[in-house]
Structure formats: C-alpha cells, structure tokens
Amino acid sequence: MHQPLLGAAIPLLIAAVIYACHCGRAPFWLLLAAPPAMLAGAVWAVIPDLPRLFGAQALYRRLATDPRTDIFFWHYSIDRMEAAFLDRWTPLFNALFALMLLLLLAAAWRELKRAEEISKAYRLSSTTDRTNPTDPADPTDHRPPPR
Image (tube, rainbow, N blue to C red):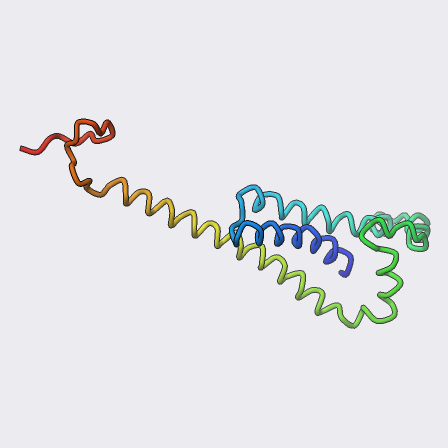
C-alpha cells in the first residue's frame, strides 16, 4: 500500500500547489486532471508488482531485486524498508490514502458550491428590476412599457 500512496500523493501535491497559487480556487481543468493523474501515479508505482499478479514469478523476482525499479517512485527502496519497519504502519497509510481522496473531493465540492452561488447570483441579478425598466437604449429589456 505504500507505493500507490506515494504515487498518488505526488500529483495531489502538485494540484495542492496549483490550488494554493490560485488563492484557494481550483480551476476546472485541475478538478478534471487531478484524479486521473493520481490514478496514473498509483499504477506507475506498482508496475514492478504487476508480474506477480499475472503469475510471472520469475519476472517479478528479477524486478524485485533490481535497484533500477526505483524509477517507479522509489519502488525498490520502499520494498527494502517495508520488511524492516513500514509494515506496522499499513493502517496509517490506508487512512492517509482515504484522506487524500477526501481532500480532493472537498476541493471539488467547494468549487461546485461556489459555482452554484455565482450562477444563482447571476440569475437573481438578471430578474431584478432596473432603475429605469423602459430605457430604450437597453436592448435586453423586453418588458412592455408601463401604462
């Protein structure tokens, strides 16, 4: 569970920096790009473990002992530390993974709520009476003139 957490955390941290640079506003493209980027990072981090899933034990053992698999978000190094002391922290890693997803959903919820408030304010402002409702210079006023 350690590698997928790290793989998903890297795109989330990049998204958090972008979010902070936009003063706490998430652009729409960020809300669309962050979840697939997190998924891609998590999958990239476990690529060396996939041969074991598909029954290719020889390839898995070769990848598990090759330090070059650190290109997959330090997979080899984390595997070396896992047996020593990271396994006892697995529940914490699971909770951190859930927290990452909740943070992403909270940002999306906040942006949706802001967009709805802006839309509601726009609708209300377009239906309120203007100071001079029959101004002939206003082409958007389609109400009949007062009697």
